[in-house]
Length: 220
Image 1 (cartoon, rainbow, N blue to C red):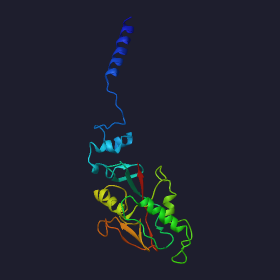
Image 2 (cartoon, rainbow, N blue to C red):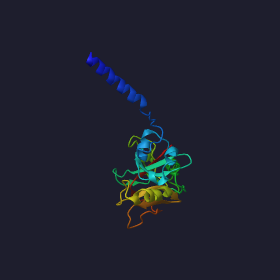
Image 3 (cartoon, helix red, strand yellow):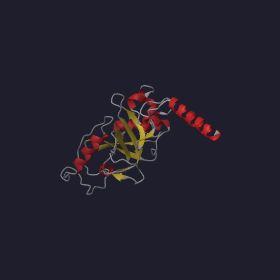
Image 4 (tube, rainbow, N blue to C red):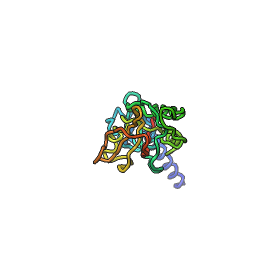
């Protein structure tokens, strides 16, 4: 009899305690968690920004890369990561083309360059001769669980450096020169992440070179 009474008391205690525990909605911002934990829980970027400065996002590893840009209006995030393990990669066909320097235009640039490579460029440039070139490789890439990668614009490269690498965050290789997807005429823009030389500023390179890959994606 005593055992039954003890069991009833215990059950009542558990029930009473559970009834009084606050119900936590993981989709609502939780100040006891980090920005990264709130993102992983599915809390919207806009909601997180109501309680945190935009800079608190920079360098967080999320969505396959490191956050380097946040749009406070629509909550879009951009992330980037090094993809240089495959070695230095060729630009592709050499032909005249202007693409954008603007932050966030890397996906459009990448598609423009791929479309240009699909044309016959032998009359005003040079045919590379295969699809084993930087932009097609990245467009076909499935990496870190995602398949919507592109090569960032020169403007994006600058803030990847400023918002992530200069803070000692990310995984970017200081011994490499990276392609950007920005091009003026026959001259592509490239960038080094070495603090000592050219660090943080894209500069004109050559389509004849082979360079490292830094890839980015957008998260809406």
